[in-house]
Amino acid sequence: MNKEGFKSGFVSIIGRPNVGKSTLLNQVLGQKIAIMSDKPQTTRNKIQGVYTNEDSQIVFIDTPGIHKPKHKLGDYMTKIAQNTLNEVDLILFLINAEEGYGRGDQFIIDRLEKTDQPIFLVINKIDKVHPDDLLPLIAQYREKLNFAEIIPISALNGNNVTTLMEQITRYLEEGPQYYPEDQVTDHPERFIVAELIREKVLHLTREEVPHSVAVVIDQMVPQESGNLVDITATIIVERPSQKGIIIGKQGKMLKEVGSRARVDMEHLLGSKVYLELWVKVQKDWRNRPFNLRDYGFNEEDY
Ligand SMILES: Nc1nc2c(ncn2[C@@H]2O[C@H](COP(=O)(O)OP(=O)(O)OP(=O)(O)O)[C@@H](O)[C@H]2O)c(=O)[nH]1
Ligand SMILES: [Mg+2]
Image (cartoon, rainbow, N blue to C red; front, side):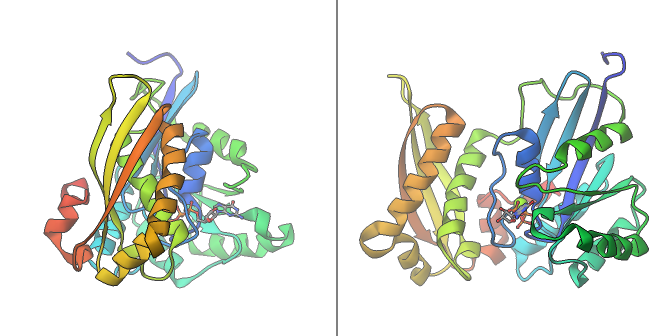
């Protein structure tokens, strides 16, 4: 049954890679459910984050940055992001204030033109630019598309995010509470645990290595004795040389990945974590449908 006056809806966050979509999701939820890094193409799946208060429930969908795909995984990522456009009530088109308009944006705008839902232009990273620089940027984007609202924010420090939330709520219609108020995401803890490991690899490696990595959780067992979870995970890379980098001299890199990931996991799970990491080479996995499925990228998710 709907509560009287209760508003709800689905809101997709889309944009080029690295503009701060996942940072915005985590900021809104006050909790880290989507990994973040300064490397483009950090997010690979769509990630649902549920914001609930007394009067409303907003289901945000964080998506992979839309880019020109170079392999089947990229293809999957871009498709999954574009397809969310049809399932939502409102679209947040995020851009980076510092970078401004680019060809990647035009590609997205072409798709946005075909949708009927209201679209907000959300100008992120305003902490990095002078306020005077915003006006020409707004003028430029306004010419490209008819935006319902244009809202400058800083997802990182939370500046103006409350205004964004108020505006979103204004556009939502009355509707049911889709999820219990304590549910924050649709993804199991197992998924986030794997992502946290991948995030540390993204933070600690460079060039092609971060993009060549997938993480699989082999087991995740809470110990009966109490406050401890046993986790075994495998980091998959594409080449033996990458395996060497991930393990590092005398296992130093793998140890660092593990200890950083463990801190975040303990925070997420609220218990101590015993983490064991393995590294495996799976040649060209980003182009192999069979491997992609194994590592959690299913075409049925589109
Ligand atoms: N200065 C500043 N940095 C930001 C802001 N929002 C995000 N960032 C940084 O931008 C980088 C990318 O952030 P993400 O949230 O991972 O970006 P994304 O759009 O989800 O990226 P993909 O998943 O690769 O598409 C990170 O280093 C963030 O810390 C902001 O408002 N200000
Ligand atoms: Mg992201």
